[in-house]
Amino acid sequence: MTIGKSPDRDNRRSSAGQAGAVPGRDGSDGTPAAPDPADGPSIGRVLSGARIEAGLTVDQVSASTRVRVPIVHAIEEDDFDRCGGDFYARGHIRSIAKAVGIDGDVLVARYDAAHGGAPATKRPTQLLDTGPIKVNDRRRPNWTAAMVAAIFVVVGLIGFNLVNGKTGVSGTGSASAPLPSGSGTGSVAAASPSVQPPAPAPSVAAIAAAPADKVTVKLVAEKDASWVSAVDGNGKSLYQNNVEPGQDQTFTDAKQIKLVIGNAGAVHVYVNGKDLGPAGKDGQVVHVTYTPGDPQAG
Image 1 (spheres, rainbow, N blue to C red):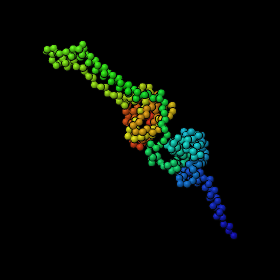
Image 2: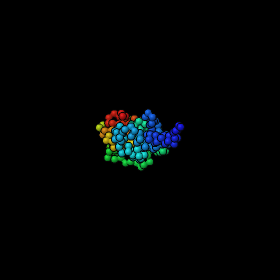
Image 3: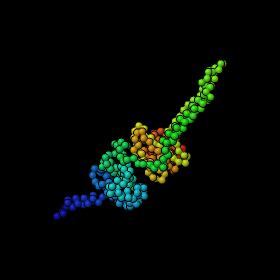
Image 4: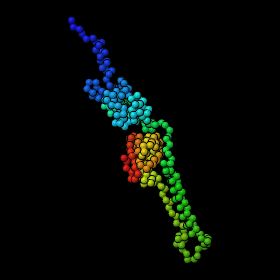
């Protein structure tokens, strides 16, 4: 008599095998496979399981990705608030997924589905809704006050020239007396005051100038808004917010200014007194670094 295999036993073995597999990997040969974004374990569990299967510790993943250990722990627990925003969360997910050997794009697609869609569907002005972050005024030269002072100097020089010219003509009152016979119009022309043309107002590039041992970057939002992040040479965050049309921000540091501009075509850049034009194309996200001297984007 032949004893057949129990279907229930086979089903239990199949279920147990599937439960033990690490999401994101093929259980047969270890080839990376994309997790199903519509179902399955959470992003954090997928990354945690793949890390364990790869035999890596959190510290090792942190060292290879440069994502801090507390943030790696938080992502594995599906807590993305510590990433600092959707932009950084997507980058951390991709970096960790690459380190543990799985497809990061699928996990990012799942993240976007759970957090309102991919960044291309959003305007840059919606990236950050917090209030403006104050920049340390002691580190920012007051270019507006300098421009006003320069204009007052120019106006004062023009007034001084006009007063001196009038004094030379009037003297002791001889200008009001009848002209002596034989004097032609040439003497009147010689006595008339010479009016100096007004000096041009300082240009925006001159206003953005800085000492040679420092780097000064001025950003002006012209036709549209843009999200901007600025970090100084010590890694300190100087600014992280929207710059609305008509607004500007100026940053100064002795070493470097590192920028992330979310809508590069809307931002005009002045570095160390030079007009570099738009930071990029409309909707383009650019990462640039500027240092003292002749402006060169890093």
